[in-house]
Length: 304
View 1 (cartoon, rainbow, N blue to C red):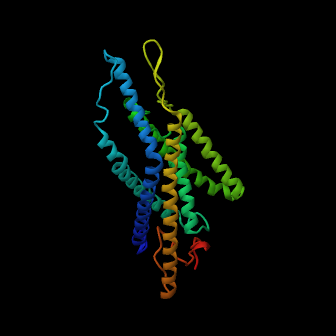
View 2 (cartoon, one colour; view 1 turned 45 degrees about the horizontal axis):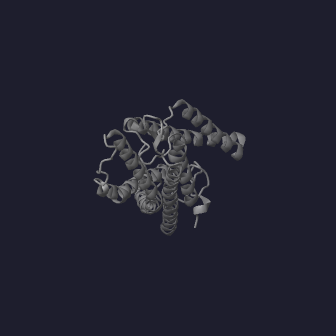
């Protein structure tokens, strides 16, 4: 069935707003990560260098470590600034585009919810399913914690967790819409949340566990020559990694919600002045104040 005239233009407007919101989120996330997470990364790198020096001292005949530890200082500086900044910006823009697609599909189809509130709902759902839940099984790790031999396996398992978590959350939302009619709003939502949590618990139990936290380095006699990875560095790195994601999704939710609320108001005003229908989004009047046979119309929270 062909889309109504103007639908593609509306979708493009939503997508570029999502990209813009993602770019804003990337800038803020870089500022947060550079201030809070980067020092923990630097401490992890220092630990890695210390372990390497201790191993070299143990293996060398004279018990002295080599002196090549400063060879890649410039590379690390670039990675901590330009590399991290570009990485966060690209990731945030991609999330912004995905966020916009989800918004375009959901708006007008999930009940009487305003654009701002829907954006916050989507932000919370995406943060939960795409980061928080997968990280319960495979948490973020700083340098010195990931073995070269397991990087590929760990990456594939993490991506699998993200895909399954996102898909199961979508399924839970679909179930919630069906169960709300039978069980009521609270019980239906609670049952769907329980189904999601139970299914994800089974997935976590089924997937293999990877534990790579370095233990203390010992010599041939069993004496500790270098301590294990600092627990406080691991704790704060993962805490600030979560904080960075919260900044990204919260910023996108707030910025896109504000822009979409304004877009809805502008289109309602234009439609009212011209006294004619305006194009629908995806086959439903997501951005139109006129009701149709399906009964879906602009949310009361977005009326002007």
